[in-house]
Amino acid sequence: MNVSATDLLLWVAVPYVCLAVFAVGHVWRYRQDQFGWTSRTSQLLEHRWLRWGSPLFHLGAFMVIAGHVVGLAVPASWTEAVGVDEHAYHATAVWAGSVAGLAMVAGLGMLCARRLLTRRIRLGTDRSDKVLFPLLSATVLLGITATAAHNVLGAGYDYRSTVSVWFRGLFTLSPEPGAIAGAPLLFRLHALTACLLFAAWPFTRLVHVWSAPVGYLVRPYVVYRRRTVAGAPRRRGAGAAPGGRRTV
Image 1 (cartoon, rainbow, N blue to C red):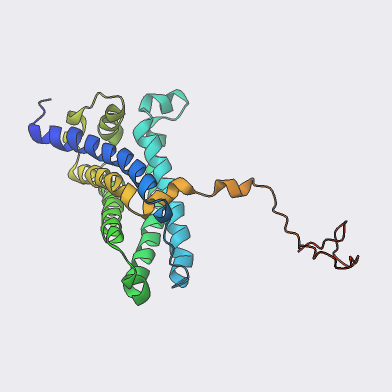
Image 2: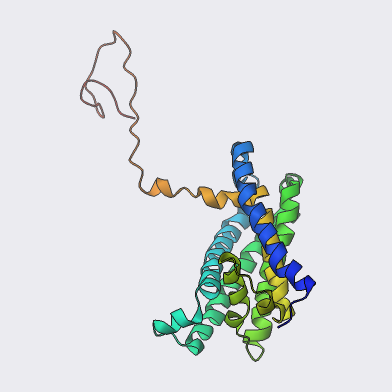
């Protein structure tokens, strides 16, 4: 397949530039803005929408990311080798992906609504959020629309033979822009917005995903003890620890 200069720009140059910004941007952000490396929670300002929107969005996001890892990074020959034929894979991917996508869209919609409708949160929205939320919404909605239009309502489209080949080629340093150039428009737009989202990632609240507090699950208990005043009589009472110090 002949590859045009536009295809080389969109499917080789842009992805590599975005990946470079993603990598270098995280190093810069960590060195320059460690105190801002948070999700900047607004729970104290509003919690009713957040109570439902945040779990829905995060659960949907984890499922969507897992589906993308399998669909884009794992070749079809590997899944077939473990006994999952193409029909079973696509049926599972479409319906599980639809559920995950709807959960993510519902959660993201609630989070965007509370940011727009709650004045205190709206006033606290900074420039990075004004870029992140529209870009994230566009990426999610384009992915959902592409799946619905081609694989739920349409005749079906095997993105593993086109988009996945292009994606893996980027990381093996053998990009194949022709593999994605002929993909349906919605898939191409979804891929482009995803690249832009990765470029914006280091400069937004998305950096907090690298600081998940998994250590809390295995950390030892912290024991607090009350100081003993020098010269004070030591009494053994309820809750007193050996040595006369009382535990709190």
